[in-house]
Length: 523
Picture 1 (cartoon, helix red, strand yellow):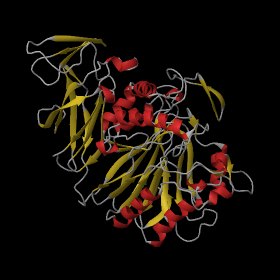
Picture 2 (cartoon, helix red, strand yellow; picture 1 turned 120 degrees about the vertical axis):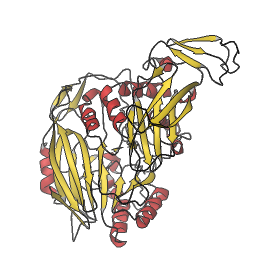
Picture 3 (spheres, one colour; picture 1 turned 135 degrees about the vertical axis):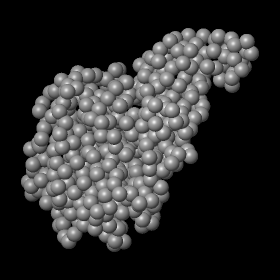
Picture 4 (tube, one colour; picture 1 turned 135 degrees about the horizontal axis):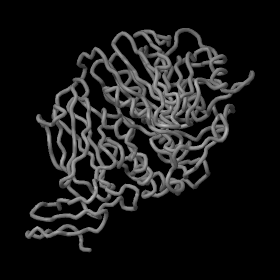
């Protein structure tokens, strides 16, 4: 088949023979497609809102789970429009983008020229097919007065271990934005069961194929997740700030190291594939375009004069976990002076942001717990070494910086744990002297670890052994942060089950902090 570049003036019909799509060529620079199946089966999304706009995303895939996702090996034009109303009678921006085969026919449009602090609606068309609409809210004007923000925190959505009811309910909240802390996909092979705290548990659904390694593998895994209509509803409901944790590539990876001892130069090939697939499937800006086995994930933004948001990357620049990453233990490596969590460049970037911030609340939106929980029963100390507690020197540097520079109202938002936590941050949790330096809220998983329970035995022990920890819960769900200049409230939304689609949602607890006081109190 000849390349789709030189087009006939006679309106030649050029059948590509993939997914029932025909490209009708005329005088256009690119062919206009005629679809036999909808190309918008993976939904739409928006992200990274600014005062004048946001990113809008879609990915053309009429047969999402097939090799090549039912698309021709050619660029395809996609039209987009943004409106001030749900009926699209007041269209305020429109244009044409190109869905390129090199990027799995994904589209990332950075919409500009919008008004700050208001909601908009967007959609895409290709040929005669039109996507479902999405909603996004622009950020308030820089340093503009903001009386209230209400946003979500979620992640850890193992497809196999539960349904995405939490996403459906989060979509109903009509939030200003959502922060996704990562573990958007899980890389493992399909399994009918998994081992949980209650023994062997039957998965309600199953991954297609084996563990993912290649670019095609990762693309199909994202497609399987994105076909879920509840996840699509969550994306369409508001703009997301997306980061990653480990399972977007491989469990517990850091830097160029995986947990299996793969040679770094080989693992970097896997990272390169995974990072490209992540970019293709997330509503992020071109500044996050992957460059080999690296991607610029950390970034900074504001929500008027209320929130200063630092979105961090705790995987890409981190040194290896100490003590061979054994659970609930410690060793000399925890005190290694050369250890890094953020890497020197990101760490200094964060310090500059924190010291220059004018907003009332300074937010560290990241992935791994900062609280140094003692997780070992008995008198000896034991940490989860894949958290900041496994890196005592970088952790202390961060908290000393906050304390010594008088940076108040710092709130850390975390995921990864598959449990809910609320607590206070001290330089040394074993000796919590004086006032806490900052506050931390850890959001549970959307589905990872299955139905869960109100509180596990180890969670009860954590509360007893760690006085800075104020709340723990082991159900699935998400967090909603309701923030004013005076008070930060965190609502822990939980489901009674995710093993079927009809789980009941409730607010399990609400914890609050007052401006100028990092103590975490039940509200």
